[in-house]
Image (cartoon, rainbow, N blue to C red):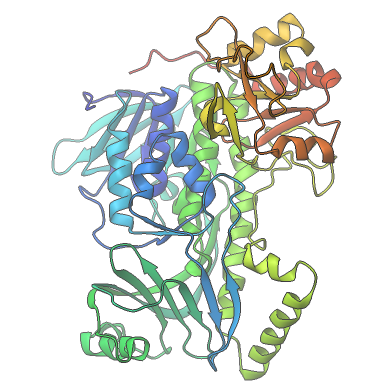
Length: 554
């Protein structure tokens, strides 16, 4: 649905790359009045990011686009790591799906972005302006005023309560707010080659480690493939991208297989940098505007999607008047530390790809061989358990550190299959996309005061009772339908058909109530007697400062 131009918005998003357009879809689904500016008129015609993980797919599930995106995605792609002498020393093929989706998936970014742009067009409260640049911004107590220009037209003004810079590594928003991007840029150059009509029989990603000339290879949908070749320091860019030189490099991988058609060949430097802050007053940075990492672990775009998922619900809660403005600094608290960890991890992975010499490469090979001989070592590699997962110790979480390293608080909650009204579905599809209070084998409402219940309802939270499988009346008895927010009975009843919550209770009997945030991170856990106290503490976090006045909408 196309809307007329909006000059007054709740949120102004600068940049409609993967991070910005994901944020737009999330804000659209929350009903937040949003304007998006994008300098380009069309998507970039060649791939940049090529991998999407299960956390990101869960976000697209939330906005109703995951099935459409999966239609163009190669799912469950394994990755093999090879020594310079040809031995495969590590094979990664995760089969578990803790968040409901495959962990490693490859895609074509132009197709991916087009789906997201079309998705944003569904919302009457989202106005995406392609071919429009941000020229200047100022902010005061009422919001952010932006000077924008569409093509060569006259400069216009857009006023928003908040602005998000998702405008890439050369971010105009970051420059205008004076935020420094700290870190380093590796001196090595890499040649990135994208091909089509690929006939190579290699349905896996591969890393060919080498002290001087490592190579990365990624299979993509529709007979496309990505190669990355490390260049020598003195290789000029024009020679590196020369078609004859590119074909020579490709022949080392294709051998007797016909060469594919080269779509693009570009030279890149790899950056390991992070913004000193993700928030300046009413302005936020997200995605590449906030952090840059080497592509060796395929998490650059996914980190940006985590930013959007974290920030969107907080902006929606504040602009709708359901939370106070003191909620917003938790974005920087929660996301900057993990983004920094991912930048560091990707940088270390890159060093593994190019060992200093044959001695260090042999040592790495022996280390991986030894690890896989240890109990659980092979599973650790195979299931990609080495991936640094977000865990928020500060922000909108309660007692995250008190439960020790295995505490679920501050972590993304699993997404098991449950049953409601005789229908099996992933958990998120049943409990909705906002706050949820889950009672395991109990109705959480029964352990809340009327005042606490009223507050949860004013927040828009859903109460959920998780029953043991087949614990109700027999087949001849009545089947309780799944309740929805609009029914008189505001509790959603689901059955734990796969036993995920059974195992949770067996491991932690005192964690019988789980509070989930809209981004599906665990805000708190408690026993039934502690729910009122947990409610009061969460309310104090969400209502820091006076709640913002609800905007009139688009």
